[in-house]
Amino acid sequence: MRNSRFPPLSKSWKDVESEMTAARRGDMPWRDAHNFKPAYFGGEDVLEVANGALNMYLAENAIFSRTAYPSLGQYESDVVDMMLSLLNAPEGAGGSVSSGGTESIMMSVKTAREWARETRPVDGTPELIIPHTAHPAFDKAGHMLGVKVVRMAESPEWRADVTAMANAVNDATIMIMGSAPPYPYGETDPIEEIAAIARARDLWMHVDGCIGGCILPFMHRLGEPMPDFDFAVPGVMSISVDLHKFGYANKGVSLVLLRDAELERYQRTSYGDWPAGVYSTANITGSRSGGPLASAWAVMNYLGEEGYLRVFADQRDIKQRLMKGIEEIEGLEIIANPHALHFFFDSKYFDIFAVETGMAAKGWSAVRAEQPNSIMLWVNLSHQNMVDEYLADLRTVVEEVRAGRLVAAENSVVYVT
Image (cartoon, rainbow, N blue to C red):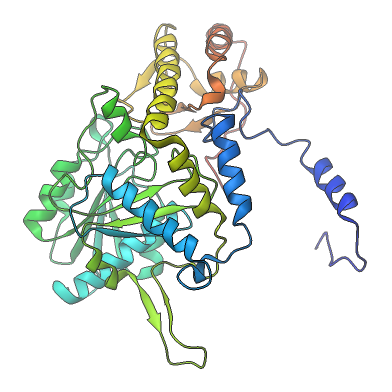
């Protein structure tokens, strides 16, 4: 039974706003210091810039960025060029803006499919080989684009199973990929080794840098050991990068970056046989707000390299303090070698989900993960003054679990829409 019907009468904005304020009273503020679920907060000043630019262009339709709103067209060119520079792209590289990581991933698969149809056609259904930890957006893309997705069964030592991926290549394979880093575990896949498979077998090689594309280059400059993952690696054809994650722009804005701008002809869809003229887009969305793109341009120019280094250095410190404190608690251990700003911890001695239940009762919000059962924490600047409090509560809860006084509540999922 439907709970709502279209309202028969108008209301004042004051009344509507009041209803919405009441409706969200149970929501956790997204940048609450007790929230360790994915939230991308780089400071109040950065948020002010992001929101200000978003509001300036919220009503402009970015599909007309090359005609009615040339400033948006310039922002897109600038944002793409800035990220290409950061990710060691060669001369002649290109890219385009999408609405988010899922769309960027879908367009990378579409581009690879069309490229393969022209340059290395296969009999039957084309195949894409992905690590066990690859984002489910690749499966969504395969389902919608008629590409068979071959997902590996394991992640030995928390990274892509390169041997299994090489063995999975056959005459129908057109594409292979790795993550920098993946959502699970947070350790970047061995991109150089995967790209070597692509070069040897003439495959399209994609790097999913939606999480780390904005982080890893700066972490490297901060002296952290980071694996090569970008266009400096021979064979990498495309990279997806989310600017609304650790680029600190407002949602949703992501990039599809190409080693060669000429490859965009495989990505683009154009149609002209209708009365309104040529319709041509590089990505899925047509009409879209110019606000997120303007937000990305504004934040990138506001922070610059200096600002991103400062923000990431602060968050690195938070992450390192948390990881060190967690490892000092008997029975807990950090999973993998996390390269970005999220990490996982588990226990071989007691129910880690009971720990999550106890921490939730104390007001801490985090993600339950599986394979193995673990807790995922995403670090942002709101946590700067909360590390000691979190670790103190964690020590208390672990003792409660060890003593058998705490058990896990009903299981949860990562995210569902």
